[in-house]
Image 1 (cartoon, each protein chain N blue to C red):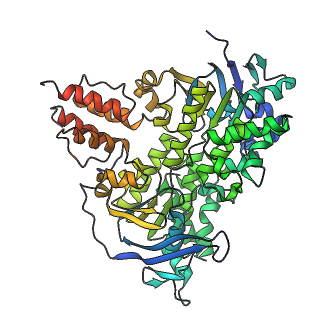
Image 2: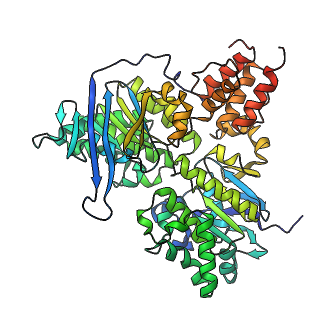
Image 3: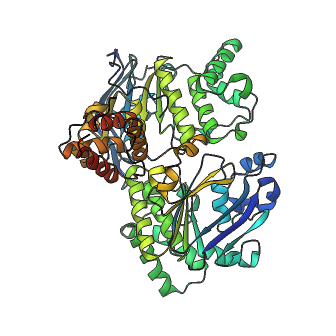
Length: 302
Length: 299
């Protein structure tokens, strides 16, 4: 509710240069065994500088496989992935450079924290980069402050003493401290309580709006995707089944339903009213926009 | 009124007070250790769950929800106060077996509950341990797997199932013990919308059959479907009642960091501009109907 960026419409997407280009990408797990499974079948996706790209799809649609290509955890056997000029298929590509540009935050990242102290855990990435000590410290300070774990207060805390929301933020800070240009977030707020979820969403918005990061967001949470994303790709059975601006994709209720997804409930309300012939503003995405649109329909000055 | 299925009477609990509760708690050891120095987790919780009732327990992280859930089948025992399950006091170890047969638990990560390499065997494990005879066992396993829609996958290894399918198998494994109450501890928080829908359908079927369900959840639109919501904050009951009554206390909920269901939040936003607009709406259908009723009138 609070801190919601006026979803999308108010801010034109700056069509930056493509930072990540995925072209006709295929991926097969356990090829040649009875469990062979083709997870990606010719996927093409583009991520431009400064935008938030949402990736939607049911479990098993290929989302997690796709994002592992975005920072070179997987390298294409068939298809092309170019990250900020680095072609991942080329054996000469410097994967370290790619991983510095694209930070991947897995689902439940807090389960991968291993240092006893928060500050040390956040410093792990920059240490691996063999940066000078004062640079590491500066980055850790910036990353922790940015996610809302003030450095001085949290650096010497035990990681296991953090709340669920704080742990999630610390794990995010650990990736931020590498100073990537693109941040890929897999289900960033799942399992958090509503308060922690709302706060983390605000922090994620700030990463783009204030820090200028480019974001790729994988989420089941339609409300979250509607609030944060400029553009969406919907995957189904390893294929891009729908793509477009967030309003376009959520606006096509029939298509979304065919893909096994329901738009956020506020969008459903607006669509239902329009189906009944009511002149309610069609492109409302969030709780606030839908509430205002309905109030306007009822004659209120909004 | 029927006898209550579960009664909690003024229960207090802190992890420090029961450090001996051991691996039973399901709480990771390091976190349990961390909580030793921490404040009490439950501070005088009283509640009752009736047979066949569907109750949602909501609350911010750290409010004591999961700790409370673990008291409902004697995974944890109160430091003071008491919990009665079908009249049996959970503090008496002699009752533990009967209590766990009455109240079954399903957790967030179904993998933590899987024991066998084939779905059917996994579901049979619990009742087999209860000494259920073979013929009866087969009936129960089939019934449980059919109820969750996984009978067709009975021969498959659980690790090759999707997260949603695993969770359905975990639920079947508990249902095969024929509990009077199923406790779901954030069992849908890792599932996609389709997986959540499947669990909602299972809950609806259990209600039809008279099995009580206690669902601990962060998802307010899920809680909105329950008969009753109990909201916890700081280890105590903040507010409880039917969803409409609880969500009417938006101020109280927001103070502790809880949300409204999205539809109710839209209604509240409308009300900011249209003073008499109702906010006791819980579904897209209800909100649509409320708008239609007003749009029809001249304003």
